[in-house]
Length: 106
Image 1: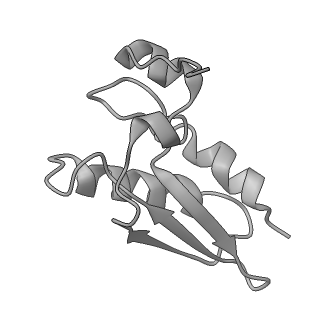
Image 2 (image 1 turned 180 degrees about the vertical axis):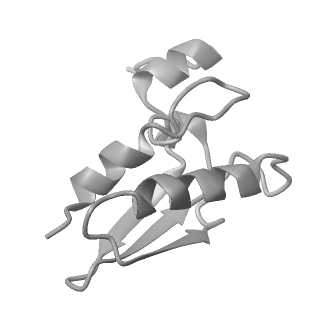
C-alpha cells in the first residue's frame, strides 16, 4: 500500500523555481489522500491565484507521483481556502529565507 508519507517525500523533489525551496517545505501541499486502489489525490495551493508557474508545479507533482510504484492515478486539485500564508504554512527554513521571524508576544 502506498503511504501519504511516500507521496509527500516524492513531492518534496518539486522545487518552486522562484523561491528555490520544495513546495512541501513552502507549505503549498495542503493534503494528500491515497485510496486502497492506488488513486492519489493531492490538494495543492499556490502562493497566489495569479502564480505564473502554477501549471508547471501541478504538472511536476503529477509527474513525480505517477512515477511511484503502485500509483494507478493522480489528481491534483488547486485549493484556495485557506489562502497560503508563509507564517502559518511554510517550514522554519523557508520562513528564515523570507525574513519571517516568530516572536513570542509575552
